[in-house]
Image 1 (tube, rainbow, N blue to C red):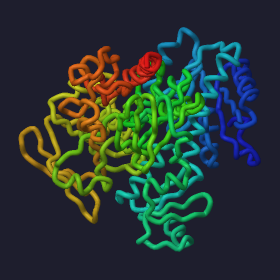
Image 2: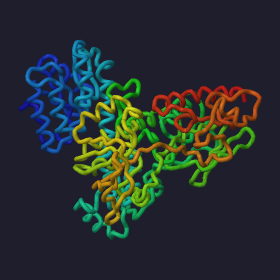
Image 3: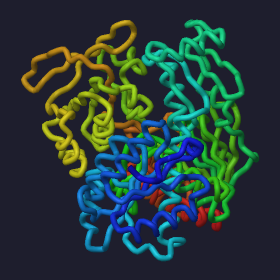
Length: 558
């Protein structure tokens, strides 16, 4: 057992556990970490993987938080990778870093998949101010943002399979609002809190705020306003109004604000858009270990705000009005934003299935998109994923961490037609994921208001009943452009035309439209909502940043 086991008076600070079999290196790691992070974290060290596992076990047993695990790769007994595999079982939320020599780079890259490694550091890291501290600081900031969501904040009490309760939970999770979910059927604490608050079942779902307020059956907008999430615009007129807070909108907010444009972004649900619900994005340039859509949204949101962009969430654009050189975006809350230019980055939403039973059970066992707020509730349960694209594959991999069984229903004969190969390989390696091709759900059955089973039609055309606890649907997307009808030219599917396509659809000026300009001068489009766009996060980010450059050209010529 390590001589640096946690003492009772110091258990409030989260722990960083470092392990290396070379005493000099271990001492240097601990020294550098304590110098920069010692005020907020306890730095514990161990001389072997086995000893470090005992330290982690003791921390977890005492209920202490483990924030970061740092391990050398080349150690006798347990290697760094082998140690992190075991430590991950004990402290799954801790960030994981591997210390490697240059010759061990291949092992580090392999560990990214084996232990979901967050980073690998090449030794030596001199000076630590440049090579060590920025990396560790970023990892700890990410860990802290996740830990904060699990403690304190608002408490929501309700039935798991209640749509209003699901909407509140999803809002809190996607907007990264610290809070806890208490299932009235599973958590004894929930009943006690309701008794103290004087609320009966008719008031569910209930939100208990930190200031002692009790909200019975609140809407998402009511809760957002009480929590200060739904902000109001600071001014009446902007250089740029961005509609949509997905990767394209966030990129435009960052570049617009950084280049001196008064910029406001309007997002109907939460920053990140559809990409923000992704459990893991592994092919985004510059993040070799991958990152979650939620983490990407958090980073981009912080960046945009730091540079001066305004972000209005839980607001939706309901109309676009063109008055001479002015553009007016009307909002669902009754207000309006005046602007010189508008960027439409409203993205797409998952297409709803008209399968019998699905509409009635949406939010009560059937969900469109990843609904990551439901993941932990699916522990040891049966989950069905409908779809065959990357979003479905990412969801299957994520839910496999919690569910006893994940079944993918694929209408086609292969995943290869629509899913990236790295995801197909991951799915094939997970024993609790089953992929059924040439198969579809043809109806859903409820019991006591919640999903009970699906009727599934297999390749041979026969039907059978499939018991299921939760079903997540990823079957194509529809653009969010109904609010632009008769204003901006769209294709037959509702996607917005731009550039040469916009010119052919009735462009009013002598000059050609810019590449991302719509049929209305000064109104631009970026991301998935644009016709002919490539549905990838990186391309959406690229279009969002490129749109700002084109907007500068438009304003300069106006």
